[in-house]
Length: 193
Image (cartoon, rainbow, N blue to C red; front, side):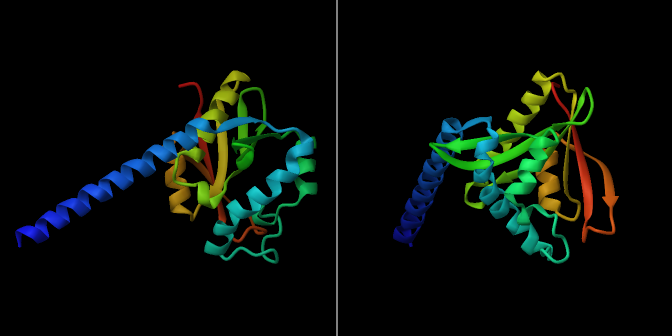
């Protein structure tokens, strides 16, 4: 009996040690990550990241190219380039030279900005990458004189909504459109506070 409890204690210590090592590795990854504006010539790198990022959402909510062709899971380079022409400024998060996350910021008026196409590769989630990108976006908006950052998300996605709330956003409104097979929740955050 005593020997069994010692083995259990050793397992517990080993598990804690492995968890601690994983945590350190995630912190190092986030600390070594760089976020910067992307040139229009680099937007092709974003297509794959956005598609992979939004694919999990599309599968979870039954979104297909037939019932929602404008969903980010089906983004094209042409749409990204058109968005850049409309005023979206694209940013990328790089780990070494690999693009692991991207997003766009659009100025809606003097003080209100919108976050678009917020994407983190699925295998890079849960390690602080998204939170660091979101914090960067808020700081970028503040440095441009903005006071509000809005973001849209599938309202039925409780986990995404909770993540935004954990990062300082509040539910602002819900849009229902005939062309969308889901309700779009608009989350809002006052930046610089």
